[in-house]
Each structure stands twice: as C-alpha cells, then as structure tokens.
Length: 202
Image (tube, rainbow, N blue to C red; front, side, top):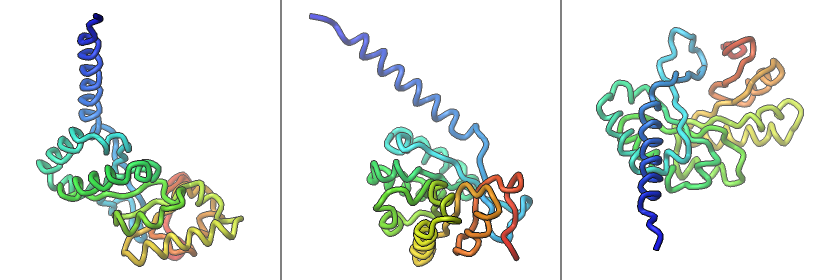
C-alpha cells in the first residue's frame, strides 16, 4: 500500500508556511487613506487595510489578527478592514465572523467594490459595515447612464438610512467628479488631478 503520509505532511507544512508569511506581511505594507469632506492630507487620521475573502475564512488568521489588534488598541481604533463584495457574497457567514472579530478588537469592517451583486443592498442591513465603496464599474457609468445614476443614488440613500457612509471608487475625470458630487456620497477615491481633491464648495 502506498504511504501518503509524507506528501500530506509536506502539503500541510506548505500551507502553514504560507499562512505564517501572510500573517507576517499583513501589517508590513502601506495602509491607505480615503478623502472625507473637509479633510486635508494633514488631518486624515484613519486608515484602511484590504483583506482577502480567503483570509476571512481562516479561523487561525482571525485568532492571530484579533490578538494582534488587542495588543495594539490605539492602532486598532484607527484601522478599517475592507473585504471585497464578491467575497462577502460568496461566504457571508465568514464575512460576518470577520466583522465581529475586528469589531471586538476595536477596529472596523467595511465592504469594497460594492454594488456589483444583486443582493448588495441587503448586506447593509445584515452586516452594517462602517462604510461601503461603490464599485468603479458602477461609478464610471454615472455620467452617461441614467440607470447607473439612479442605482448610485439608491446605494447612498439606503446606506444613509443606516448611518453608513458611501464612497465612490475610480473617480478619474472631472465629469464623474461633478456628477458624484451631486449624489450624496460621503467621499471618493481616485486619481483625478493626480490625487484626492476637495469637493466642489467643500
């Protein structure tokens, strides 16, 4: 009979090594910031960190992250961890556990690339993220597509009813900037003008 134990051990060792590397590198990359109304580069005080949907499904990673944040409460209070909407939809139970774990540690949870899946608005009520970022595929259409503008407004309106700020992603030109400025978004992310710029009249 063939002995598969060595191959199994090697596979498990490889998984553990990758998990260790992921944990060690998680906080080593630069965090990002998002422009809010009235903020300047010198006043932004919160950062976000993207997490993969697969990470959110790993109990060992959640335990490690919770412990790391518990030991650095001041850091945790400034961090928001984003999961992409597709990962949240694929495994909402894991996303809910991730949201609970980071909240328990003093950090926040948000949803990135929001508004792609049909059931997205229901996620607001069920998970109550700190904020959502409307996906660029939706934002890029708001200038020329009335349906896209209507959908963006419905996201902002539904989020506002739950006190959830909505951001617009991939704001790359003035026409998009001017349009999303009329729809009630709390802020935006994009490379317009080489970096974030104030809202009209902000």
